[in-house]
Length: 89
Image (cartoon, rainbow, N blue to C red; front, side, top):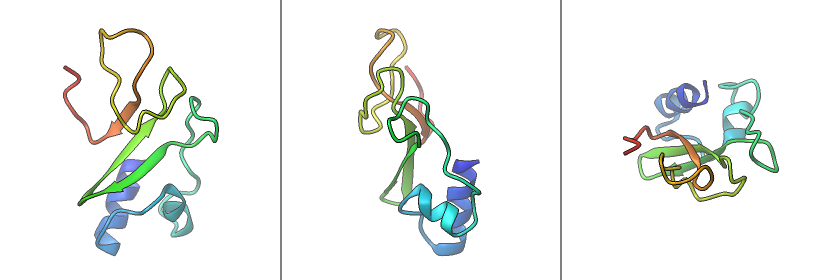
């Protein structure tokens, strides 16, 4: 829902929102999406050049800045990136 809301916001406003709070404030979401692996319990949304990054802290509970967790590189380390979608290998 958060990814779709960000794209709808971009269609209406010409750019992705600066934060998840913007999506709630403008009515695109009813609440900020939760992240069980974050101290503040919310997913991370960062606007980038023409796009955005949406991720969870992941199993290590640390903010890796959106660096994706790599399969086969241990149980911990890296973030769970929801957008943009990339090839895990």
